Length: 550
Image (tube, rainbow, N blue to C red; front, top):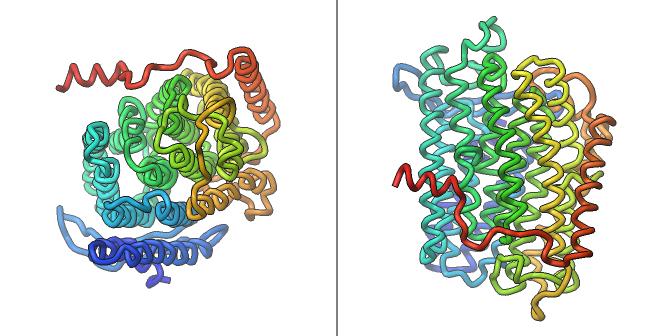
């Protein structure tokens, strides 16, 4: 098993180097190596992940070490149920993105460098997921940032691509200083950089309330930047000039998901720092509502999906802040499936109509791209929280966890807990509205006369992702299908089941009411549902940043 874990770590990096080395010689060889290496990573990743689900004991290995900064630094991995499910998600989405890219970038002369960066990006996320050393985690964390810069700027001849890449790089690098300083503090206080040792010590030693507040606060800064939360929320939508398949990987299983993963991984530390959780909960409440409002007035399909990612990540952070650890992790997994589906579906739509991303250029596509229509319908339904799709039950569990926290006040200030709850309900209504609006504008009404179904390499990943999107929620509703999901991941016990009738009924009423309003306006006003933001309009916070920093 030790060799398997090392192979899972190394395969993406070997694939990246090999594709880059042969890229100028043979396009066919590059494609074969890219997909084959990603497929091997998928098989090895699942082989490592499956034995560590359920009640399996966590395992860890150290392969090399050195001494620096007065402490031992190791190439060490740790596999527990949380790492296992994230590893499975990352390798699966990465493989599907590589397959999809065969069709989407079939004629792109920069495909060799693109696919090499995708493999490197995947390897960086795998490193973050498996890392049991804080410095190893930092290397993967920073490597993802570097890869995202080059991938967002893939079409570097476009000014918006260059600007988006620089913006993403600078904003995330600024926030990453929080992670660096947190690592230094933790190493000094615990005498080690081994994550498992630090968390075990935190769990066993009776720490006073907020004794770990400073490193926890610094970690919050880092994850807010990586996951595009306020005040770093503007970089992710501006990263949309990059190729659509890489958007699927960034939004679903790497980069922005890494912020949520880090909080979940370091959760015992956060439980000793309620002030950090309160800050995280407050920022999540603001971010989810603001980003949902931006998604509601955007006419660009990819930007709608980008803003929805920011909002859904805030949902996860809100759940973590309120103590709903399992629900937040389950929503991270559900979101990974349906958001990858939606971005790849958006790429199929863009491919079908010749490259336009504005929803004003779309419409009436349901009969022209039938596979894309059916699968994206499931994806939008899961995003909106329609039962019994994947997003419904995980959202319900998060809302119920926040409701419990608002009543009991174990971790958050009561005012922040209630603010978070109200924001979640309002965000749920807005999510239904912008999801239904996008679905109607893309697939109904009148649109381009010429549109074509994408090739099989682009359709098959959509079908594969539609399965967990459609059935993931049902699996959670029947715990025996997953072997008691409430006990799969949690580092501490959570009372109750994952399904709660009270919040389920509330969220269903929100979905029905918000959807009814949009449909009524569609019938009366057609495509002009409500006033959208003009194309190219910059956000007020962007203008503020320019005035202050430029």
